[in-house]
Image (tube, rainbow over all chains, first blue to last red; front, side):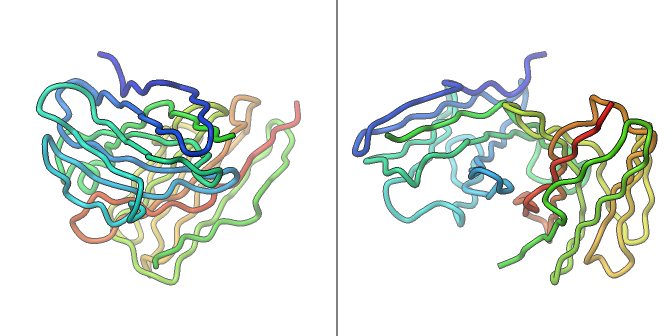
Length: 118
Length: 111
């Protein structure tokens, strides 16, 4: 049973370009979360999605960032017009249900996508 | 906003030693989680705690959920080289699944 799959693992973009990060959750999981990790920092929550719905986007910057989790296909985190401050590791995590993290602690992280903005 | 405090930022121990890491907050959390992150990898769950006062073990790891629900500690006994990594505490409040993470403690184990 494959874990959470993220790609690309590494992405280099110039300022002003767009970055698209993809996440396929664990099989059977319909809840996806995106976190951002700056160097020497902990992970910061960005957005929580369930299939086709954004449940909580309180951690998403108001501009340039968007996320989707379509009925078919992976979840996408999209960053438009990237700036140097967007350089970070972006982690996707998935859970079986919306309450399973609270009830069982089960939140499985991918290996991350490392974005470098030149 | 809610914050979890972990210090020191780095710890250096000798192989075979025990080590204890603390995590504190000014806010109450209903669930505490401890994760380990290896370089270039995502965090992996070590221990989850659900009730104030709860003490839980997982092999050489022991963690406790503080009575006040504002702190937790993680103990690693008889450390080995593969214990090297970054240890994060994380907390949950309410019914949401949005984790708040500490900044992590980088553990180095000298052979």
